[in-house]
Length: 177
Image (cartoon, rainbow, N blue to C red):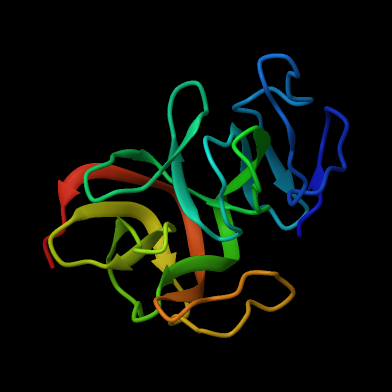
């Protein structure tokens, strides 16, 4: 995983998640943004539930994450360190090259829309009539192989993709292919 650079105690691995509860405040303020040496940008969030590496999520104004659905709008990012419980804080990627995005195993290119899978993952699927995702470009087709250098393992309905992120956002505008 990437190492962040800059102030506030960096370097800090983006894959590192820490306990964050009302009794144990996070070591970094929610909403903090940081870049790695390659220029990729990450935002520090409060995980609402267990999240897989590569899962695509959104967050609210308090930086509490939420799963994607067919009707949700707002900012979008990719989980870069698996959250094993809901009482964790960690990083999501919002800008740059991301090589471990979970998506529909049939996703190839073009527009994508948010969805929740039957096995509980929040991912992108092929766009049909759902909400449009701006600032998102898939560079590879879905692979059911494990992402290089990552622990993400795809299932029969999931694939691992590489995407270029440019502050993705679901605007509420329907897909018009």
